[in-house]
Image (cartoon, rainbow, N blue to C red; front, side, top):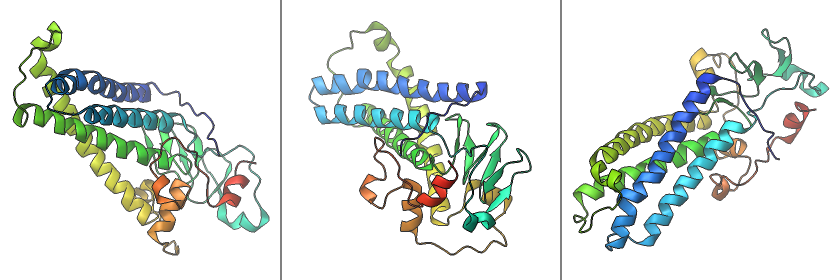
Length: 265
């Protein structure tokens, strides 16, 4: 199932996404120029280290673009509700439209989203049933890229031998220490921030509870059968094949096709 393009008009969100893109572009440009290429020329690292860095950078930006532009599960204005599922739908008191239970109205986007987890300003989009897996991929690959950057920053000064040749780029040569310190600070903020966010998301999937439900305690008094963690992860990622969970180039196929299709008719 190919997700439709989704664009949120929110200047605050554009600024947040622009900041993330700036950090990604900064590290993608300067880390190879400051560390990887000079170290490769002097035999301190192999070509595989360079390719691995660019691959992790590519996967990170693809996950960001897909999570930012994918439809999170916006409900249509006139959904067709099967008779057997009428009890599972309710009326939204903000947009006066019928929606499945566990949906939420996003005041920033102005519509209801199926199984909405939260609205993330860093991707300028809601995180809902249809793009939750893309958000998890973004968290994962951001951890990989920022962690790799921190390892390279550390090895450059405390593990590798000093470089014998100077960088012929005058700006980079003069400001090498400042550029690497800035990279380290951004890497630390992203790595530990994403680790905490990724952990909370994993706990939410395992317990089958969204962030909004945790904050509002709306799960109290609701009896839901506890699902195995393999099933909840399969529902989020749209496949039972664990090896495909973090492949950002595929399309998600919802396992519960009946409910999903009914809300889009």
